[in-house]
Length: 139
Ligand SMILES: [Fe+2]
Image 1: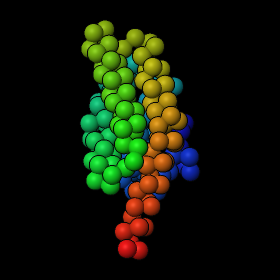
Image 2: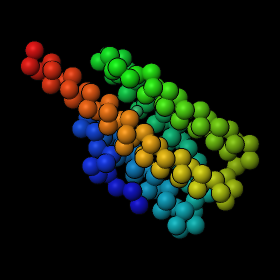
Image 3: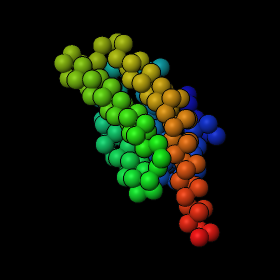
Image 4: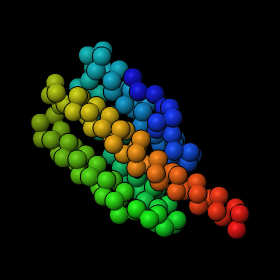
């Protein structure tokens, strides 16, 4: 089971809350897989991920624009890659439902996002926001 710790914390409340929820949803999926209910859980995991990419990633993008984040292009490309990957997975699910490998596919997609994006790119973004906030306090 994954847990929210230093490696995923970026210091910005709305992002950290989003990460806590993301980890909790990943753990729900992992738990369902352990108890033999992974395939039945797929629909909930996909619903959650659709909401995450719609709402949470969009919120991040709005704040990046507002605070003129220098690396917005690369960061937004990564968000779009997740959206593309997810819409492929949702398309597959709509076509043929969840076979036995499907829960593992979603589990990997989520674990990869945690290690490739949340623990790296979001931390850089968090540092930038913190610097911006501190700057506005002193000026
Ligand atoms: Fe991000």
